[in-house]
Image 1 (cartoon, rainbow, N blue to C red):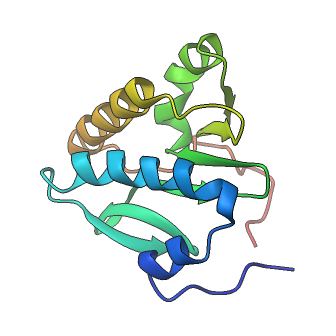
Image 2: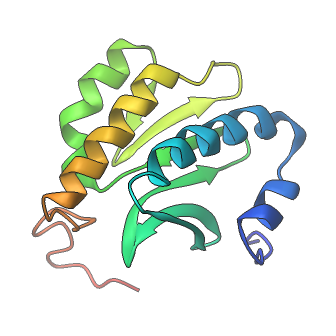
Length: 138
């Protein structure tokens, strides 16, 4: 069953499961610390907090056993090995953080700053060219 539709980011945060609060709150703080001076807005996209400038630049996600900070796949690919070396799972476009792991603040800040620069350089795509070849997006 899908999660209930949230009204805004504050509503999303108010309805997190207890074990998610410290992780997602810290990711939000790191995100806002970089997004606000860069002129990015915080808003709800696909029922998750997102940092935007007309289009989504990155987003936070929360699941039953972990949270993640998600970036466009082409951007994040270059950081997968670094995330894995730090002991975190790097899935397509996202740094996955389990509840039993601390938020890797230095890595997250580095990723956010690099993504802002990448976005300002004109890289707005969220998928790799041909990623959906032969598949219909629903």
